[in-house]
Amino acid sequence: MLLSVIIPVFNEEEIVAETFRVLEEELKDIEHELIFVNDGSKDRTREILEELLPTTPSNKIINFSRNFGHQAAFSAGLDHAQGNAVVIIDGDLQDPPSLIPVMMEKWREGYQVVYAQRNKRAGETLFKRFTAFCFYRLIGKLTSIDIPPDTGDFRLMDRCVVDQLKNLPERSRFLRGLVCWVGFKKIGVKYDRAERTAGTSKYPLKKMLRLAFDGITGFSSAPLKISFYMGLVATVVGFALLVWSILEKFLSPATTVPGWASLMTAIVFFAGVQLLTIGILGEYIGRIYDEVKQRPLYIEDKK
Image 1 (cartoon, rainbow, N blue to C red):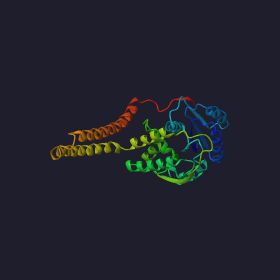
Image 2: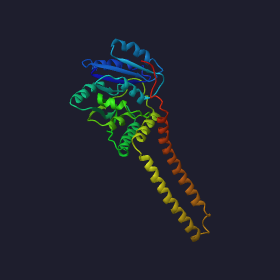
Image 3: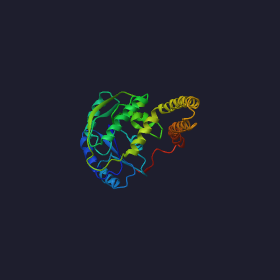
Image 4: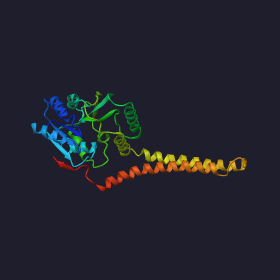
């Protein structure tokens, strides 16, 4: 098999048939397989796929027993892909399948990872564009690996890259970071991201924040170092407050309530720093807890 295309879908009954049609049209001259990963959809997505895919025997459907998440769906597709090259693409047609032949050309030139880099993000709110811009710049500063800015999961990978990704057992996955971590020769291709033609986004703010936390904590210990420096600053400020309180007591005893200002300032400041630091530690400990349990990344209902 020359090419495998992995498409995770979750409640996409309004567009999944069109996604199938467009992909088959764009790839009609390339030996390929489509791997739809149904991430626990509760609408008619599964039924529509089971009607469509038997028309091409090489295509596959992987149905999860429940919703395990976007990154788990991609990972399941990688586990089942047989192609020499593997493309991962969302099922909402915002990322254009017409770019896949361009990626294939770059792959034939010797590049082992070809990632799609967004010029424009049509149909997205100013808030989402701004937070995405900030996230990619922040993670670029905090991590030691080079994660290209303005890139999603849409990319082509050579078989050698896929085999290395399958050997990484971690549960809290940030796939675009893992691809950069394993290395290999890579190049980007620019494109304009289109609006959704149907359906609604399955990535609300809560899921975006979770993905951002996975990306930062999975590839950087910088938050732990930041908490150390915050503790150092808090110690210096606390010492300064102590000195100020002593001086205030002796220099103007009649104009101040003894100890009130320094006490309240110290309590509020130190409590804030401690709670923030505990939260950062909790995030890393939670990741360790998930890894230690060794639960499977996903469970298949039917394949």
